[in-house]
Length: 278
Length: 343
Image (cartoon, rainbow over all chains, first blue to last red; front, side, top):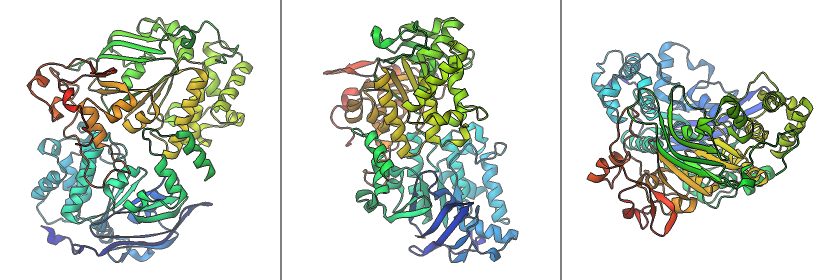
């Protein structure tokens, strides 16, 4: 069933995503300013920042929804930023098999007129036209914890958490090397968010897929990433292993972000003062 | 209280009368076409100058509870019980009284400031509209108060001439807070007011709300899904599940010694930067649908302490031993004594 995928399964530890010197300006605003990082197979990298930090623009350049002014994005060694990367259908499909994205709002990222099963079938038919997909659809649904009742349902019959599971299944359908998750759990309730985060951990363990996890939530970063980069005003201000950065932040902005997480004994006035000082 | 002369003085001020800013007693709310009430006997009070957090997930009824204080209820909703704001029952008010309530006595701050303001009107028009239309204030009087309120939230009078599109999300939420303060309310209802904001901006807005509550003597009901935020900012917390109050008590008691399995499970499933890496203790399953009739505890199907009695009888809200202000609706709350958080 999988032989239709031309790309070899990434071996553990191999670099599957390499981003170097990424820059992107909108008018006079440098949205992304010299951003570099790399991601190995089976690993999870977090990009943390607030609105305007450039984290979403970076993600959009990585998947190809936005073009970089300068810099390079290599997915499994293939250059995706170059203008000669190929515009044809075959090239586009090949690029889609390298990297997939799950968006923040599960209410907006699914076609309201298409059932869950049809969503998956359409994606599979597009990428693997010759195979029979019934088994694979059941496998994908099982992987994200959905049953036959949900498979036959339209998105409006599903809860937010179930829709996000569908979006994840759709992204996994093409067996990408990298999954980009842009605030993929931010719109979910706490208990549903925990279910989805656990699901993502399981999927990574089973498939060896790499995650690029865009979020503003340091709790989520702690939970699902191995390494993290902290962005502010388009630049990377700090990067390293997640455990180390959260335990001993070096940059004052990282410290401010950590202090801003509400907890008992939290002092919002102190944080506001620190923010103005920065 | 620096009640300005532009505001009529017949407004009941709860701080003086020592009545609660908000007092909800046995509120039931039913919508047509549902199998069970959306709110099933909610009791909740907010004293003057008090910050109370109302925590729950989507569909728990927390937003409906807070909106009931302004009688902003869905069409065809039927209610039972009493909702008193500064001593007056909102559910029985005539349109005139209701207008006065919404202008002067209680104000609401919504989650998304951009959705709550007309983008084609200047901030000044937005701030002064209600005072000019409903309180008969002159343009000059209303503008003077708007300027003072903008200064109170840390913005300059220049913002009066600006359009919403020219302000950032954090600044616009300050405008919303200024608008809430325009009528000098006894009660502010804040429905997820920081969810759409960045974390550092959230701290700023929360600090501001707390300062203003102190300065203006208002009661604050803070609706949120974030138990950590609730514990950080409030005096008391109510945790809602499926239209009922599952647990209520002082913030530190709920956070450190939860007695309802749902509160404990919510705390355990929240990812925290200082927590160990790895899987979260997620709550399996989903809250009961509104089409499902409930005979016992609504949390029973997801609860690891559930026994026969849980599916047969609705638990009553009872005080925790030695903690009279800590109430919990659970048949097995004694099993959570000790540290469930460490379990």
